Image 1: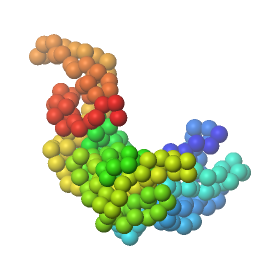
Image 2 (image 1 turned 90 degrees about the horizontal axis):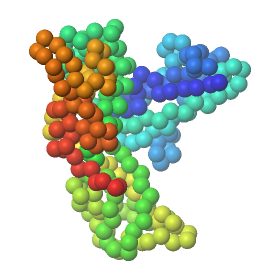
Image 3 (image 1 turned 90 degrees about the vertical axis):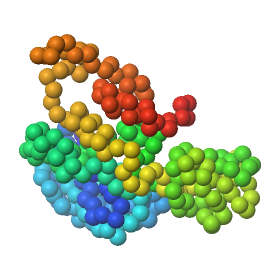
Length: 296
């Protein structure tokens, strides 16, 4: 059986930067090279071709990558890669998803300097591990707080209520990229953004309700989230990184432990949004910075 995954933590790449996206190819759970060339085609959310049938570089058994230039990462966006090659004498298409975001919430250099005794070792903690965890932590912090701590792209199909105001799924809308209403493209200059509340206001009419022809009559592409490091998110992310990847003698489910200082009580993770981590400082920060709307 052929399996695959995004390789080397490249779920996230960054605006106006060179990028490299990877795929890991498996046969029956083992990384396996293709028999012959692997090519990659990358498209964005709108279906525009970013790379066309690019020959991928083999970077170790079963690992392939292609490079993106700065011209390919000029805007936040979502990218969809299709890797074509032959495994087990059968032509296969492997599909990976990637995201161009505004900036990393911490760099590899910051991670290694944050705990020199632990993370400075590139052999124990390879760059790929740090990058993969950074992407996971970025997504978790948005999930827990309802805030995108690095600017992102979204594509939404929504229904209006015959008023001039439309609520979008995200807060901190910074830019409207395109708007289609009932199949017609409307100039973005016809709308005003209520950035923090996640609303847009239409100047030249109303946002329509659903019709039989257009059950989701409004299609909007936009940027949202913060465009600079704020509220100490980099420190919080680094604390999470350390907790997630550095080995501990304390079992994951422990509620307390004993050392030379005596008995130490630990935070009990509540799941969901109550104490989502076992780090008190991080949990407090999440609570203080949450804009999560429950039930949405």
